[in-house]
Length: 308
Image (cartoon, rainbow, N blue to C red; front, side, top):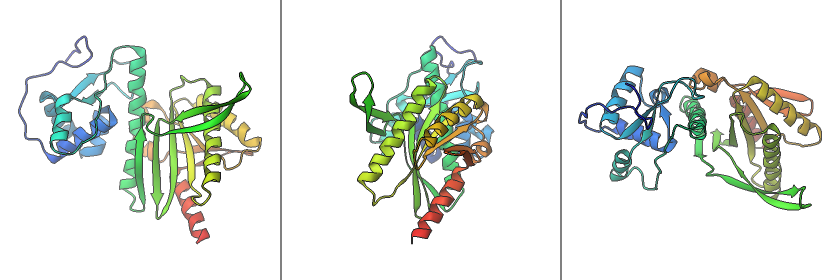
């Protein structure tokens, strides 16, 4: 069905439905993540793609969700449908007592900045879904406190070359979460890199995160909290350049290198086998080593046991 001028697909005739508990879970997932593709909803809530499409069609016809059809060639995960929550869907969640806080309804216009935001959000959501998938399939691993959209902001004092003084800089990650395994845990700050930020600026941001990390550890040494700053990018060359720059920083004496850099093709972001087995490059003074997050958690767990 061709899209109308506003970008939404023309709505077919409404068919009344009885809202199920799974419908409410779908609405909540869409509301919390802002945008979800058909494939992402399928991974989260259904055993088959056919049942996913059938139920989404009914929720769409009853105006609980809206559907965007993204034109081919744009930098999104695919040309499949993308769903957002509608006012009726939010009201239903509030009526059932599932949502109490205010949730805004995202708006997408057909302009480059808005479509880039959509692409960025879908990529971040795929990463979240992948790690929820890891946690749900591993009885010893759990994911906690996922936040996105600058919900977690840290501040650090950095020298200002122009004024020869220090300035307070806000560090805003694309997402924050914790992974825990058998009592050991690690914090993660995620940067989804579309290649639009200058390389020097991105590396400066990672260096600032490292400085904040060391300062916070000194102020609360009893916590001895492990942190990692993840950079997920979609170009092999870009990943290589970022790793080289961070390796240079590691060679000038920065200890406890907390950065992990990974590359994944955009069209593979919805593949669970790719994301769950993703190999990250960790810069070190001697170059870099490759590690999976599963290996990272195992090492943290081993160190924890060694201190006991």
